[in-house]
Image (cartoon, helix red, strand yellow):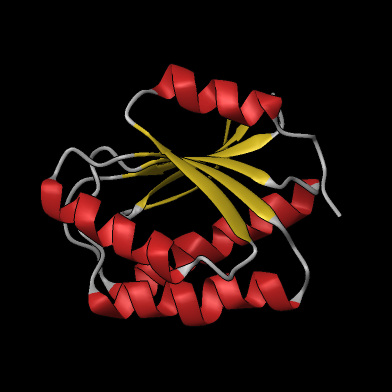
Length: 137
């Protein structure tokens, strides 16, 4: 795997199997750094014409209200308006409050370009990603 981008929010890796590995770091985030992290995630996916990502949120702190709104109103809305379909296998956070915030984001994204599944374990998440077609649209 090759490191694509890293900041205090986490690391983005290019997986040779054709998906982005999005690893969230523990701890609080500042909003501009969070926006940069997700913007780079979109850029990585589009650069390779990938539509799949494994989001490792096991150590992640809960999303803030501001982060949730930005994901829904900008990040996912932009992908939907561009017709860019994404598939996300999400490894659930250990923290129960972070799990609740992830569930809220996923609930908000029902009408977006993101198709997702949540997993407790990485093997199941990877198996789901492998079953998806390489490209969409």
